[in-house]
Length: 429
Length: 179
Image (tube, rainbow over all chains, first blue to last red; front, side):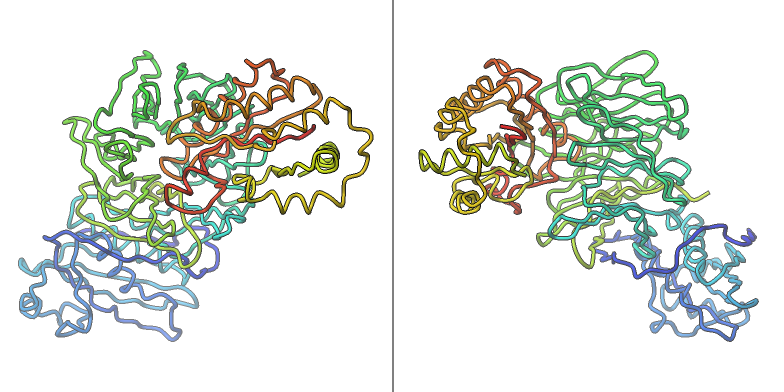
């Protein structure tokens, strides 16, 4: 039995803002696991804003790996082992049951204890007790979802992660860089500008975000501290300053500059400001991304005539082309420790743009998104399971997500305006 | 936006030759891309504020006579940055003007349609600006008169997701900062 106590979630959170994004699940896996999350018992005077068990049900359902029983379809709502009759849950064809009790310890301080049971083997798999203030109840709920997901799938959950994205009004006169929970809740605008903002990239510590701002004089790269809001100009050379990507250790930034006349990949050490030129070709080289080893960079190059993905060893200089299937392959991101590439793919000239995965060991390319169009900007969840991307849907730019295996799909439309450029943040510390 | 030099040019074109001109504003309004439809509007705007007509040299007046100078947008094929033959006359006219007017300054803005990735399009937009720049330099224009900047797919001339909108968005805009 696992017992974890999480005292005082040390998270700096703004006041709860009305979420601008919502989630519409469009496809889950056929063999999803039946699970019941019984409404938690509540012991306290004040009514908390967040229904923790609701958030857990939404998280599990959205993952596509679970089919979650609605509370009204349950035969009983037990809160303790004495009231838990496994035969009832077997009748409902449930494989797992979650029960919980939430207690108000003092003003604005809550304790949540929950248990996960295996219905067939009639045994407890997991118990945790967590504490938090009212504004931390969403974090508590996402941590419960993370633990249940990991226990039952063997994969670390990513419900506690954040996403960054850019929203625009229809007139394209105002651009907001925002951060929200991975379910779209608790949106917080961290930068608002009349200039286009794109290519947000998280530092591995989750504390900084690099991005491009396209001012009247051209593109510039900034790094912004998320907590303080302080932004630092990293690159404003003549020509392009674009496509930032943090190294795995967070000390360096790969980016695209055209100060020498042509778009090339550079690496800058953020501490020493030492610049290293990585590519040297008259074709377009851009969209760098680091391999987890910190020694290789993958990037998009037009050197063959059309955009394709290449990998360069920063130490030996060895260059390798990775994509051969398709007319246009660009903006690759890595999934599952670099075993998969996720990229923007156009099969043939004039065809649709979709998100595809490329298994680097087997060389197999699979198109993941087919019901959205003009798909771009794929970003992979830190557990390597989901890809969030931007697409056109009903003439608007929305976010959509698909699992790396293509089985799970959902849409994340914005309530108003366009939303683009998603960037999935790292695991919280 | 228009400066005094630009106004002078308008004054000359309108008063002496009755040729209409479109002020490409440096922003990305629809008029900037579809010059023909914007002519009337620009004309009526330009007439009231056009003083100092006598200061304009004969040479500038002669140049202003070339209607090709009113065309300030060069269009490209998808994922292409080479200059199509039908735009060479327009570019030659601008090159001639820039050579004859060394004080003239131009910003070349490269743009793309919304298809493909944001970053690759930013690079492609720069190539579109730079091919126009190179073409003008080959025609004898001093490189110091030319600046290029890419706006990628971020500032479309026409909003829309069809071939017609896309073809108007794949462009380099020739924007005079000084005439």
